[in-house]
Image (cartoon, rainbow, N blue to C red; front, side, top):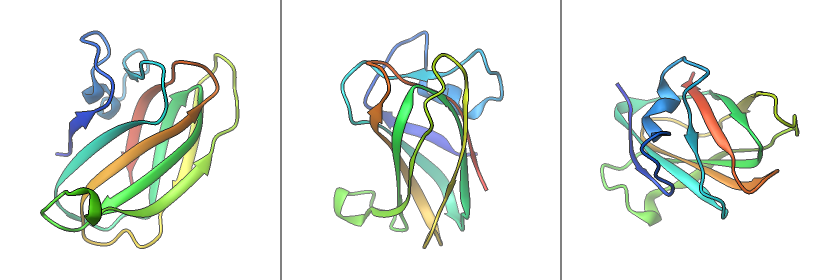
Length: 127
């Protein structure tokens, strides 16, 4: 099972691990400044086509992948990007098409911009 191994924002009440449960009342929240990011260890090589994201107040998201066991900065490459529609205080349900996402061991999910000082990610599904 995949796990979040790092996050740029930390709050005990809103753990980054919440992005993998399907409970809409749990989530990971940013702490204000952008960009904010999550690093996900996929635990085994994955070929991905799409990322499904449930969030609030996210404006722009970048997805990067790494197929190397060394998750150093230079080994990541862009596999997807999307501008999200603003929905106010309603949940955003977005699908991000991924290209070149073969044999990935790590994902980096980067919130580049938000519609507010704080954004939240409620659920991420890798397809």
